[in-house]
Amino acid sequence: MRLTFWGTRGSIGVPGPDTVVYGGNTTCLGIETCDETIILDAGTGIRGLGVELARSMPVTCSIFISHTHWDHIQGLPFFVPLFVPGNTIKICGTFDPVNNKDLREVLAAQMDYNYFPVRSAELAADISYLTLREGQTVDCGSAQVTPVIMNHPVISFGYKVSCGGKSVFFTGDHEDYANIYEPGDPFYEEYETIILQKRAQIAGSIRGVDVLVSDCQYTEEEYPSKAGWGHSTPSMAVALAQAAGVKRLFLTHHEPTRPDAAMALFHAQIVERFKETGIEIDMAREGLSVEI
Amino acid sequence: MPDQDKNTNAERLLPLVEKIPAFSQSVSRVLSLASDINCSPKVLVEVVSGDPVLTMKILRLVNSAYFGLPNKITSVHQALVNLGLNTLKHTALSLAMLGVLPRKNDAGLDIDALWLHSLAVGLAARRLAQAKGVPKAESEDYFVAGLLHDVGKLVYASYEPARFARALETAALDQVDLTVPERAELGATHAEVGALLAERWGLAEPLRLALAGHHAPSDETPAMLTDVVFVANQVVKRKNLGFSGNPALTPMPAGVRERLTLTAEAVGAALEELPLELQNARVILQL
Image (cartoon, rainbow over all chains, first blue to last red; front, side, top):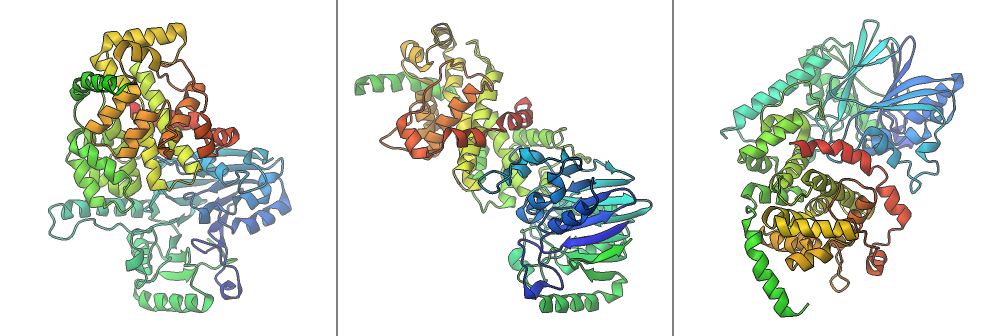
């Protein structure tokens, strides 16, 4: 399978001279298996992927949405294959227990006429929507995709994609769990145990993959003022890779205010700091394509 | 209505309202936490855990097919780690509000249908509030107001079943607004009784006003919450989602139309998916 980063930025697209190396488009990963294209998230990066796919129509592909915050769905209305009859596109993602909305409705909202000139009802491809529950494996040609609930302010899925003995896990937006109690509080230990169980469940879902792609929006220094926002630091991403025994780690969902020069420095510091772990750590860069 | 009649009614109705159990402290606290954007997870857990019935209902819901989690959730702490603060907060709020009211009566009122109607109005009010740009945390108040708008009917059905049964029958036979036979049979409308109950429960003033005014929003003291619940109630009735016991539809008063500035098309668009949402949310009624 081949993994390509079409969008690597978190929160908002930041095209410009300062982001040409690491990329300015928001989250989108493309995975080519032997018989299908699997797309993880539909940030603005999905536009380029759509143009690429449109060269050889009809297209059959599956799009898995980690969660429906803008930076993970905003490119969808510009995904060309959606507009062409004969293409078959499956869109899968989380449910929303707070608003009781399913995926189709949430995605249709961004194509409301107030925001976009084409209504979702007018999309000409054969589109199906699938609202997933944790652990529900979806077959995409010869590949399987399985969602895991991660830690973000809304229900957000990480996805494991397996095909032909190779596999990759993408965390989507994720922050490590924090104990809500102080040490010494009577509930501290109980809460800690539950966190350990949840961490173990996630690590268990990732274990054995060839590549882990993890959220790593913040530096350790930035994190304290962003705790609870649902994003990871290098130490969280590396701890996850270690817990799951993964040897190759790509960091993504780059902080939009971090220009290329600062990204390169951030990367170098991470590589130096975690060299003892034996994990190959790379920064996701828009356009980077990796054979797994 | 002359002031003297008003007092007589209030005097007559108060003992009725007082029969309804007081809001438990945990429910009041969940209600205030729900609209608190800085709600501390620790406090929410403390409040929920302190109420065994609420805890049990939450665990039943998060373990239901609706959430479809592969691992069994056995504590509020575990629900928080697995589903996050927002989901837990919303679940607690929905279940707490539903838990305070009686589910049976002798007035022949179909309580399940009324609950479905109330839930639909709650969901619709929240959607309309969001369409009006009300911030997310605040839109929970619209959900609560919609959910509780007909609570006065439950007071009547539980404690004045014979008279209320006659009012329901008259409304059905004559196809008139239920508030008319209510006033004739019981001396006050379910909206007025609901407002008294809101007062007894110490609910916020805008919520009390919304319950009081949901059939006739006031032009003198206009409030968006009341206007939105009015519209939500009428749309839900028109869509036949559940049944409130009231066969009549009230046309939109000019004041509400002017204040809300929502076209029929915008209302339609905001509520297009309501039946589907209601279908998804029904699970909370079964608990």
